[in-house]
Length: 159
Image 1 (cartoon, rainbow, N blue to C red):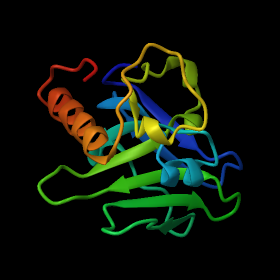
Image 2 (cartoon, rainbow, N blue to C red):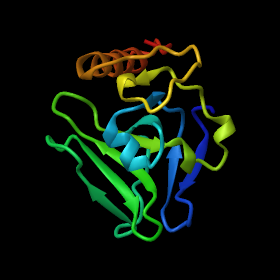
Image 3 (cartoon, one colour):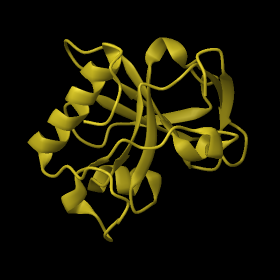
């Protein structure tokens, strides 16, 4: 992927479509129970973008829900196929972010590699991939925050 790349992401049935421009800040795997339930998978595989890089889907095509207060993350499913389509993140003092499931990209093989695992203690199976494994709420959130700051400062690399 390069800064000039645009992907048109879509849910499995094609009812939700939206463009994503440029490179993600990073890609991460989350094993928390909310992400597992929302994605109907052993873990969430998401790419994190600045909100400005992601055009919002057509109004009415996505049903948003908050799984846990505070409502920092609005998780959106396609209203037709009910599959995970997009997640909007807004928290005080942080930039607005959008998390895009890897499986909605048209060419997932071109996506950057994940930088690590969050909430690994919630895993349903061990993952032997050599990536950092962060556990607990504080440890996982700190790893996410450090990576966000590192990437926004242009340093990249796993944290």
